[in-house]
Length: 156
Image 1 (tube, rainbow, N blue to C red):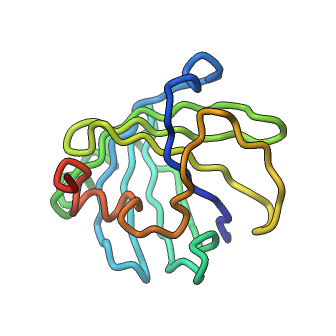
Image 2: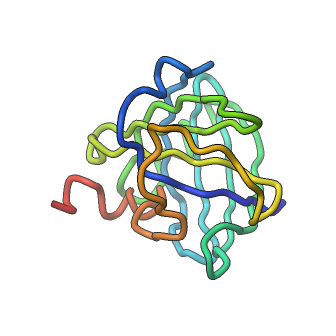
């Protein structure tokens, strides 16, 4: 139940041609406290309830618990979430032995594209594709919970 991942900005849309899947995701947050974020998500036709703990000092690891719920339940929970909904399309892109999840954001976060790769260990080696940009692992403003409160459109 520990999630280990690294996060990067994306500099080109070359990932799209290599994507095996893409799904729209709409999500909100019942709680955005960094010590215990509670997220409600609809991914495609399925709902999820997720609890995440605080990240370690490098930002690569944190507790994560997720439960699949009915889409109708997720829709009801989204109605009571904190203000600020995340709307994005997620592309899954195989690179070497890993899958990168590339999120293209819409709405208030339009223009932001971020890629994450999940790892088995913090020091695990992985191949970096050419379309990958600067690493933003552990940079709190790129967390979805923070993008819901301080969207990308307000950064400029």
